[in-house]
Length: 143
Image (cartoon, rainbow, N blue to C red):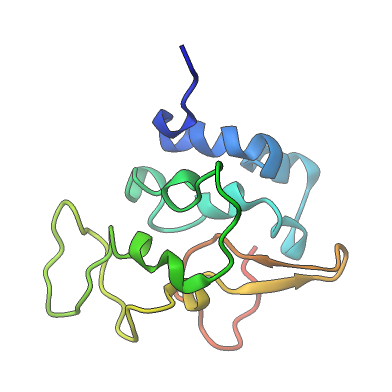
């Protein structure tokens, strides 16, 4: 038998990926606050409103990332993933396949607005924030 992490439930999947990328417990036990937790992508994903018990169980790390492929850095290439759960037009009604509301701005390059990048000055690297949300201009980094 071959272990397939894609078949894990969302919490176990986040913990599996978090074993390298940072779990909720890693962040809490290390006291990582503010920008210090940007590198813990599974922790940040779990903060998203559309994740977990109140959200859509399809939202997992492997819903967007294929661990057998190189990381895709073109944010527009993730639009199909977003639109697999979110409505493509505001005139549409949510259903079981597409419970997420339509974006009032666009259906292109979703991640560039809803998953902004931040420079972690301590690591000298820019990370994509995996706390998927509506980002208000000038809003501080949400812990």
